[in-house]
Image 1 (cartoon, rainbow, N blue to C red):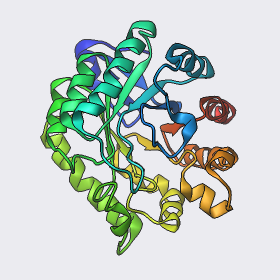
Image 2 (tube, one colour; image 1 turned 60 degrees about the vertical axis):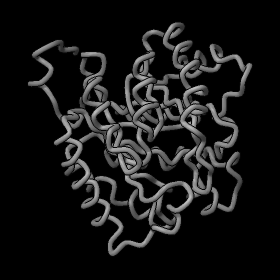
Image 3 (spheres, one colour; image 1 turned 180 degrees about the vertical axis):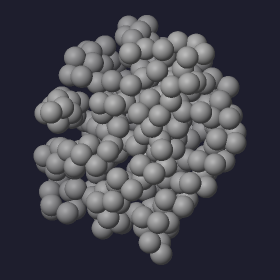
Length: 285
């Protein structure tokens, strides 16, 4: 069911966001596919190299059941070096323009912590802002989300790629993050942003054990009354626990995605769209 105009503001819940002036239904979990315009993202399979067949790559993801394409031009893995704003823009804008032209119905998320990059991406066709630093780097990103009426993905994180792994001390991992997210949500709403999606930031300023504790208690975060996105596809919390490589971690990823969906996740961010779509299809019973 799709609502337009004034009807939209009367029909909101933690299962709907507004995108392109329409309600996007999250009552059935949706799949966010990852496309990295970076040479150093931790999973090589997510990278799109210069000269690669972008159309075939995106088309395959669409055919596999992808609902949102998440495009990033600056690696945010722990320990990675930040690229300049200029380089980030040069990496992502051509991709967004081409994808928007060839796949007009695909929803595009820009994975950035820079307000300027988010704005330029929205101008050329992106729909959603995915901010891995939750406004810590540049709170003006919330103003951009408001101005363009773009849904905003709030990721819980501390520090940056260079410092986050030294900032994983919590009194209670669940209660502390619940408090930190609550405070940040209040600031974002005050900035005028309506559509917020919560990402607990698996792997960002958290130990592997803390990641699993968060996942076990995922349903608690539904009290924040916003859709929850889970992104632990092929992350080290899987490969380290199972003593396997990133390339061998698809099965572990599918297990955690299944658990997350049963605990209330509305979006799962993945490198392997086909397998994630199968999870959602099998759980629609």
